[in-house]
Length: 355
Image 1: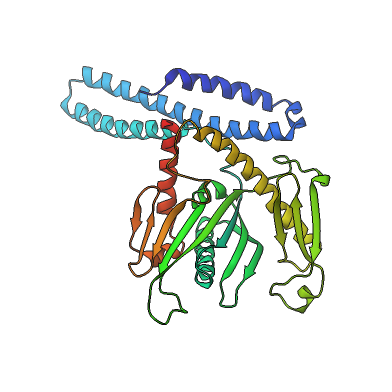
Image 2: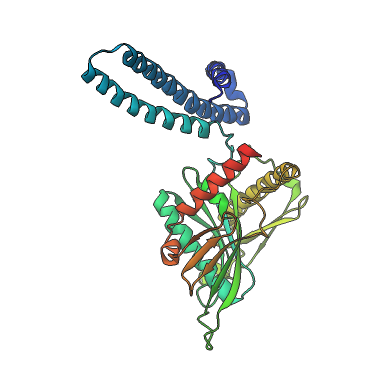
């Protein structure tokens, strides 16, 4: 049974909210206005589907009444067929309503900042960082997201010790958040002459892009250092103090950026990453408070948790949080990861409902 009283209450809340938004004073507080707009979008979807459900329900009652009174066999058969179709449609509407009633996360609509770092495994881990970066790039193309490189630290064999980039587009963080954690790879390294399988690890952190109104940072809380870039990029990069290191003194968080030739551009990129890390730290603090009362199985924040294994000899990829396995590793690394992400999303939403 649907919570009818609650749904009617949400219709009343939507009417009051739209009245508030029509008042120009709502624009005075940008943070509050953005939250009101988010809630308006959420409620509009719920109430629109509730109206559709009620319309279908009225149609069902009308056809049922016709079946009770109709004496013409041919008309009765037509009514039964119509009723079967209506029942399928109303069941679909009920499923959608239940899904819409699950509390959403206000950060899901944000852009995502993705940080991939090599862990145990040396050069092999760095090469797998490059593999994951390509995988996420292909996935972003499928979703129509834009990609912006923020920082990278290359190795000699084409791998990355670290790469940081931003994905901009619809639900970028809401989908990518499930990639946070340790990704383990099992394969024969290109540098291995004996044909032995090695196990390496790469950590992925996915942060919601923070805006100025999300996180306030005082200038005196920052220490900004500039230095000469040591990465690739040519002489013009390496002969100027274009690289930037920003330290947030209260938290101890350090962000570096040397991807651009311009010191100013590097500072802007570094500040973007810093804001997102501070927002992520606050989100983690809130999630830890919630976790005290229940143990979440679908982790989106524990960076030390092993979440997935990529086994090249078996062409197998396994997500350990939901015990989902695919034996088409090449396709997975080509960006076809949506089946896993959607399954994780469903499991996570179910936890929120049942928790």
